[in-house]
Image (cartoon, rainbow, N blue to C red; front, side, top):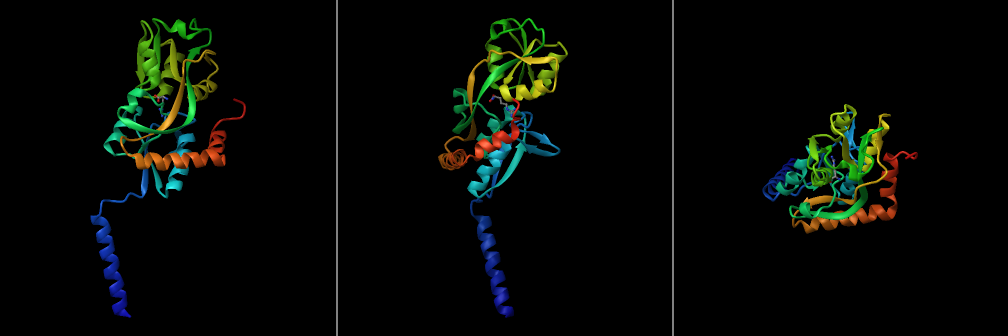
Length: 245
Ligand code: ARG
């Protein structure tokens, strides 16, 4: 009996050693995000929750992996993915030609618009009125790019979208350009703010993956397709968007 046990132990140890020597077969899906973006990703206590967090959880489950969320500055996410520090970038990230030079994107999972937040009674009533104005954005976002393109604009870049919104409230800047759903969350929490009717652009969100990792893109696309088909994706979105919006 003793002999058998020690044989088993030896075998088990040998297997472990072999596994260690092999190129590490990862069992986690590391997600880089910036949890300053409700309802897509934000903190509830010390946990990152939101539409993206739930999508990642569901995708990881389909892939048989354990999800690990890494919160970082928005403009660090692409670098985290290209360096391999993170497996995916999932952060309400808009697919752009520029980003496609550095990462590959999965199929899209949401459409979004960029909107303008102003203080009620502001002379800024349409995108045209932003010329020559002080515009707040979250650093490195598409809102940042749009704002910089506006004639004569002065762009104030914040680490968090919320800080840009605070700045409008304090009359330090004239407007904020940010994605619609976070805008609604920020404005809802403050009576003095409003979102202009006229939106900026339509965009699409997708998951960023290291360039050339076709296998992961395909696996995630399959998982996303399943989530869409089963109605799970709609359920996740509905969970985080209040019915009165
Ligand atoms: N959709 C915008 C972009 O891709 C903003 C995304 C900001 N996301 C975040 N988690 N802070 O640039």
